[in-house]
Image 1: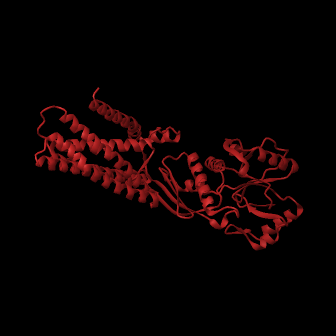
Image 2: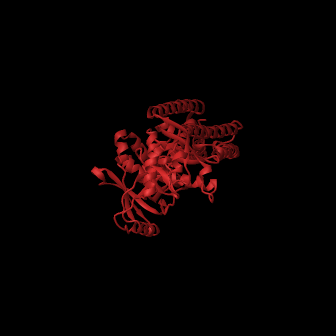
Image 3: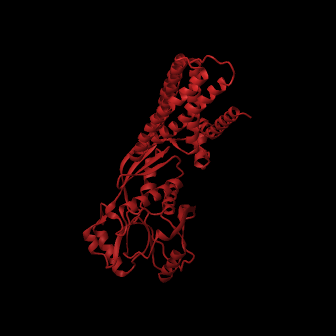
Length: 470
């Protein structure tokens, strides 16, 4: 097999590989949306998929701020934000959302994008919940019972989530007042003998009062030991299960609980129980987070963006093809072939890398195609110059590619440097544009230079070629 045949075999191999990586995306997005939703809920997304960003698919965009004044004394803001990102990512993964973008922005802000999720309320409840799980003993002493009676006479003991000073004065020493889930409140010990830091897993099962769901939990070995000792020493008393400062349940300890297993009940709806299990499994945020910006993009707007973007891309592509065929004739056909291969390879690589395509990303694709066509224009003009001075076709082609190479590399390198700065300092959509642009530029160098040169070499391999349609 000759060198030209080996090169063509390699090109055809890459084309077949690109189709192999891109086919799952084509099949996925041509599937009925209802069927696709079922597959997505069952976590049956293809291994290689070109994801659609928030602006193309619709969804929820949140900017969250870590409350720095509520950090533990031994924790820095940087560590807290990094930990919060990991916790949020774990929660989102368990929520079953694909194509997410979770990234730090500035000193204490976190950007979360959830394509396809337009119910922002449930998303915020899962992502933003601090999920600080505590087990505290309920004070059942006579002093505490009297205090509860006097507090009840004051009306609501809470204002803006804090205990009123008049109610706080009535509390026994070493106790705190915590709200329950439904206009109730409990006097519990200020000491926290066990927290959710020792939690291993949490899952929902039916079987509570009246068949309502409960959340089963299991502690690690250390937590199991503490839980066993705590329940063994307080048989007959109430143990408050507290999440984010709210008492979810306060069951009576009937006997020592060994093995580190238990359950949380609180007249949950199934979706509430599932959300609670998710945040418990994912771990607690290092500090409360506040949502400072929220945007919801509807699916219709996303579909309109796709149609508009594709229409603009096709119109631009059509105009470029007409110009190249009219101005460079058969050589223009070679350039158009290289441009189409550029699109195929770029989208296939993005699917393989699980990249997310956004509107700015589409702009990056179009700019990368323009760079590829620009490279071919430089090459063709160089070849024309060599033909004008009377050089043979074979020498004119080789010299044209050689002289154009440095100019093409310089132009592409400048674009890569620009894209690197955009990626370093830009936000999510700008980063997507930069990644798409760099990938497109790298591929355009291969298609616009090496593959077009292979076509010319194959054409000129025949003896006696004296003219070139350029």
